[in-house]
Image (cartoon, rainbow, N blue to C red; front, side):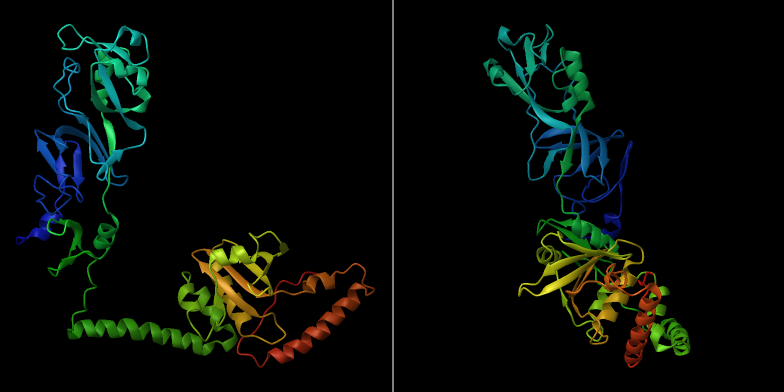
Length: 419
C-alpha cells in the first residue's frame, strides 16, 4: 500500500497561511493519507487552512500541537445570515474531540415568545432574516421558541450578547477544540528515529522505520556496521576509559572506592546499584508500604542533616526506624553510601531491613533502637560525668569498636557527633 518515498512524505510539514510546521496527527496537501488520523484532514485554499468536521466546514485559526488544541470558526456564518434556518448544528464525535477550556457549546433559540425579551443573551434579527428574534442559552424557559441552532462559543460571551453584531463577533472569534489522539507511540517513535503515521487497515497509529518496517512500537536500535574502522572505534572507546578507570582505582585504597566512583559520576544509577545482590540484600518497599508502616509519618523520632526519622512497624509488629532522605542534589550519593554501609557492617551496627526508592524519593528501613540515639546519652542532663569524663569514655569505647571494624571491607566514617 505504501509507495516508495512514503517515509519522506511522512516528514513533510503542512504549511498554509499563518499555520505552519504541522505534522502528525494531521494530513493533507502534500501529506498523503496514512500520515495522520482520517478525521484530521487539512485543506489549504488561498492561504486559508480549513477542516471538515461532521460535514461542517471550519476555518482553522490556530493549531497548538503541544496542548492538542485546534482553534476554529465556522466558514458559513456571516453577519447577515446568523438568523438563517439553513445552518446545520455545530456537532462533533466526542471520541475524537472535546471543547477546550474556556469554551462551550451553546444553543441559539429563534422566534421566541415575548417573555424572553430583556433576558441576558436576547437579540433581534434583521428585517431581511427568516427569524425575528433569538436568545442564547440552555435554560428551560427558552423551550417555547420555535427553532434552534447549536454553536461553539467562548464562555466570556455568555450573558453579554444583546444584538446580532455582538453574536457575529463571537462566532468570528471561533472556539477551541481539543483533539483526542494517541501521542505516546508517536513520541517514542520519533525518539527511535522513526516517523509517525496512521495505518488505514488496522486503524491504529503506526511507527514507520528507516529499514522499511512498521508497527505499533518504536523502531529497533540500529546495529553497528561491522567494518574494521567501526570496530577500531568501538575498541578504543571501550578500552581507553576502562584503562584510565583501572589506573585510578589501583592507586586508591579499597576504603574509598565507593566515594570516588560517586563523586566522579554525578548522575548515579541508583536503580543499577540496588539491583546488585552483592551490595544490598534487604527488601525493597513501595511508598504505600512506607506510609502504612509509619502510620502516615506521624511519629517523628529524630532529625538529621540528611533527613527525618520516623518510628514504624512491619506487618509482623517488628518495630523499625524509617529514615526519609531529603530531596537534594547529593541524595543519590547519600542513599548509596548509607545503604551499602548499613547493609554489610558489624553486628553491633544497626541492621538495614529494607529500603524505598522511587525517583528522588528515598527511604531506609532499619531496626528500631529502643534505647534511643547516641547523642541522648552523651548529653544526658542527669549524668554525673563531667564533659571531660564523657569524652574520655566515648573515645575509649569508640577506639575498641574501630579495632573490630578494621576487618570489614568497607570503612566507616561517622560525622554526626556533636559536642
